[in-house]
Image (cartoon, rainbow, N blue to C red):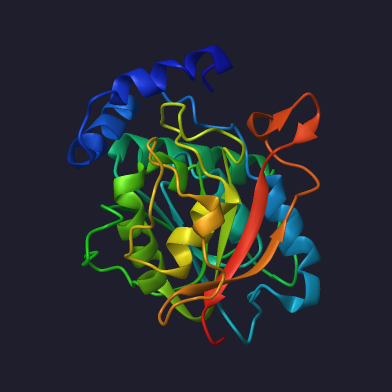
Length: 272
């Protein structure tokens, strides 16, 4: 994992780059083995949410009810393997073939070492598939495009504001009826005036885009949504926020002076 001092370099790599060119920049980062966003392990905030599953909020797999999951921008696949341990059949998606090669190596090491056991009600690990695709492409060859659980971490924050309406629309289309989108919100306290990636990802950003997928909310001069203007009612076809909590633990990058800055939110289709 790259050191924290590498983080300021990332915004410089994307400075002045159009959104259409971002994909190639991310691929180049992997080709150059520059991945400061890699956390070196799974998201314990996600683990705790699935383990506790308050009020049965998350549709967990069982022998009689298999479930699928998607991790876009999966990188080395830490969270893909975590979801597999809960019994989900998981698709790890990334633009970079180098990322997926690293994910396969990571999975082989973890499974060989017996590090990742089954969790929850799972009697066996779910299947894992690595897919090298563009998240925004409508057709993923040979891959289903409806998932019971989608986990977003360091993916939304990789999207500059002009790309976020399309991100929200794609999330809505990929989420199966009755499914859940889980977002580990990072960097939750970054100001919109600060350059990205990662771009600011306050709770208001998620709420504005997911409640009205495809729409671009009014933004301030820095590109951030205007929190006071974010409406809580969900438009037809939007996603509804079910839970918004501060996790009990998270990655070091989501903390400052021992205080957790990350949030975790859970979303469902409106009307469900």
